[in-house]
Amino acid sequence: MAILKLSDIQSPEEELQAYYAQLRSQNVFPSWTGGGISVEPDSKAVPYVWHWRDLRPQAMRAAQLVGTEQAERRVLRLTNPGLPGLSASNTLLANIQIVMPGEIARAHRHSASALRFIIEGEGGCTVVNGERIPMHPGDLVLTPNWTWHDHVNDTDQPMIWLDGLDIPLLRMLEANFFEEYNEHRQRVGPGADPSVAKYASGGLKPAWDVAPANTYSPMWHYPMSQVRTALERLAAETDGSPFDGVIFEYTNPATGGPAMPTIGCYIQMLRPGRQTRAHRHVCCTNYHVVEGSGYSMVGDEKLAWEDKDVFTVPTWTFHKHVNTGERPSFLFSFTDAPLMKWLGLYREQEET
Image 1 (tube, helix red, strand yellow):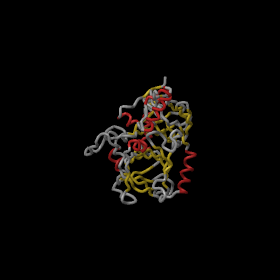
Image 2 (cartoon, rainbow, N blue to C red):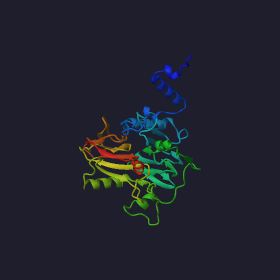
Image 3 (tube, rainbow, N blue to C red):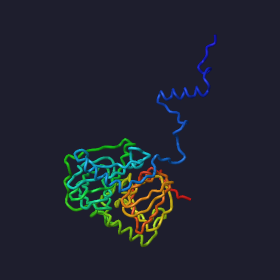
Image 4 (tube, rainbow, N blue to C red):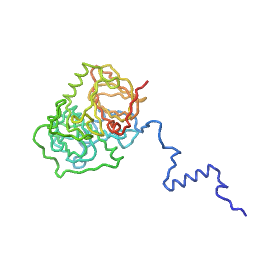
């Protein structure tokens, strides 16, 4: 009697499915069935705006319910609907942090690079590697990777700021480390805002400082008072970029490169009643509306914004900005463009 083989009683499709099942049981995946190389980036993140009118009450509520003993950092993480529970964009966190009068967010350091863009409060400070950095609305304060930092609110008003960190990137790379300082706060060295004193004089820097390439900026404080003056001065001379209006990048004064190797920081001014042309780029971007009102078309989504709102633009998504108000709009943004450029992956395209 002839012996039947399994292939004699299975159809070709059944045999193929049985093969796939056997591969799965061995933790092997046939790449030709999907999940391979895409024609262009296809981000899971979606365009989204978080309104300050919603965020501030929640930050104040957190301050009422959660003490510094329960949370070393009282932070509200903004999460993208396309990345539920994760982050605002694929590689970057955007958080709202609040420190109440008399509170100290204890000193620590980590592999992640971080920025603080001050939204509310006058006179608190961040101490970075023993240097006291003042915090005023519109200021950008850096706490680069592996620098000791603590936050102190010695005023009688809440201090609230936007955090930007590259933690999702570091988690993906499995390269994140964290360490607590041996005291609750750092001892502060002499001088007021020494990083600005050394590096904020235009094209001048201390001749004895030798900064290595591909490192973070040694200037940890970019005051809004100086930035606004520079934007207004440049706006009087030029229309700026057709895609972003009058825009500056916060740079490393020692190298001319980005403020931090993994995070690029920008500030732009949009004139009243003006709109930019649409373009897209291979980098995700989180925006904070310093002041002004208008909207951004991000893909097919219209994101209306006003003072202190936060919104996100996923990678490789066409976007343009429209100032609908009667005053200039100022937008701060941070992106992973430096990393994409360093890896040779950055690309831009204007909408035709």
